[in-house]
Length: 59
Image 1 (cartoon, one colour):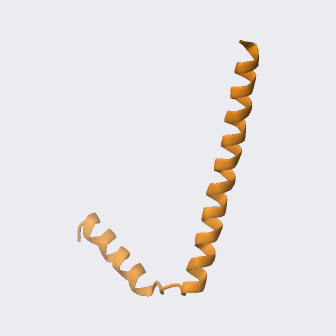
Image 2 (tube, rainbow, N blue to C red; image 1 turned 45 degrees about the vertical axis):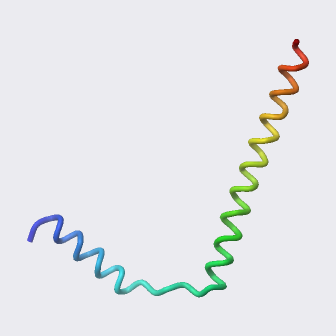
Image 3 (spheres, one colour; image 1 turned 30 degrees about the vertical axis):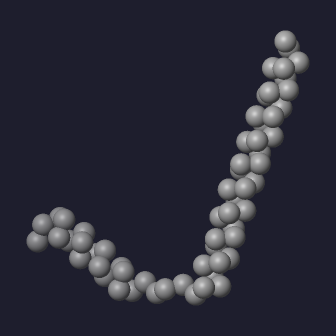
């Protein structure tokens, strides 16, 4: 058995054992991910805004 066939076999076994998450769990994870993206984006926006004000004040 080649390495590729072995890996594919392992992947198939893992997928057979995996169970589908409930809609509530999915929505909770989705909210957390979107909240994290929003927070990181907000921090980046504030940093960019401060940098723009600092460079505008120098002119």
